[in-house]
Image 1: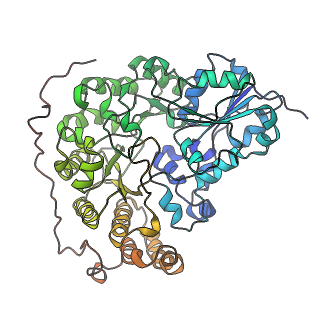
Image 2: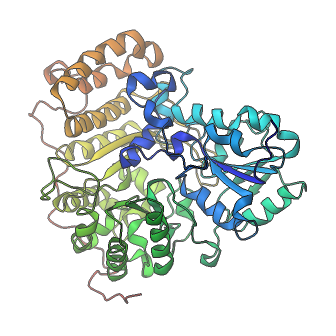
Image 3: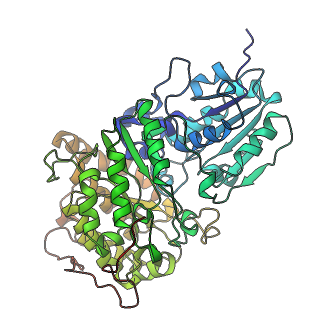
Length: 554
């Protein structure tokens, strides 16, 4: 039987659409875990998403909903379908003229992912890569390719060009960057059969170009800002100045999510504290608090989640954390026994710490500490963590190993800072440096798992030792894990990366510290005190702004 199909089909992979347990970190895990061992590692749930009665996806990544909203200005809703890979057969047919595919991390080669699949061998693709390939090489796309254009866009589209996969996957056009000003003319041209460019470079649009979404996105994502402007050399977003979505549009998008079954809203931003910011990155506390309370007040919203933020604002003005906590903590989906909240809830936010080396910090990311000096970065981290933890914010923090120019003394400084944070309430994710296109470090060499030093391996596995100790739920699970550590090393690990990981890995497996005291830099036996301590306060240099200066409400 011949299928007519929809004129335009928008699709996303299952793993990038998953909202399993409402957990963003579990979705991130899918980009790192080797697909070959998905069942064994317990991540096979990645392919189970909800489908509406007409076969369309109930939720997809927010970027795809933005594209859909833009296209609905030019095309009828009957012309457009949004689906997962398993439903492509229902919507791609003889009348289909363009298929748009969302790519968040299609090959699993960003900071937080490349290293983890590599621990299982070069031939092990992460779940995200396998799921994306299943979508982009779907037989129905190949069958109807003579009369349709295949367009791929999203924050991970650069990976396809980087790995030279555009022709093999028969992709007509890659869209890299923000695409609000590109989508409509591109899809109109594709639908009418015109030639379209092989690649489009998107640029930061004006606020008027960002549409209200029309349907539910994964995790109930609602954008509150775009851009950052802090200037970190490894990040393209940091090079774009920040802009805030108007509150009425934010609330309209919240109501759209709730109307289609979402009871959780994820406030999405590159930096929470830049919402309606004042001069020089000053946090607009009244506007931020109003936005939180307004979202929480929308009927049907039960949970509110956070994405990214910097740590310096919590040190500049700790009352910001306190005032946001009734919503950020009180309406969080996350619970932990270490929380002092009556329901044991805690707020989770992604925070990029990236290094404990003042030299590397000053060289690559000094805007993160503003209004503090780069030399104050360790104090800012320790004080900010203390403030957040006091109010039941348990951040998920990243560190980058192998930044350009990293020396052993830089890694030791990061280890010293990590040691000082050993009692913090947090999750810490070690990553490897990857040069991203359109960044100041885009031409530098990637860090390689096989080239990590013994100090870098110590940092890597000490991070995960912290995470296991803080989040483990069962002594039986921990005991089995500890037994598996030496088995992994002798059966696979030393063959893949050599002996530099041995003793750091044994620390992960809770082997007695007295066996490793002379082999590792940090001494966890209790004999050594941290090189850093939480400061009573962190003074703001006179040349910077002062927090007591008034800021106008927006």
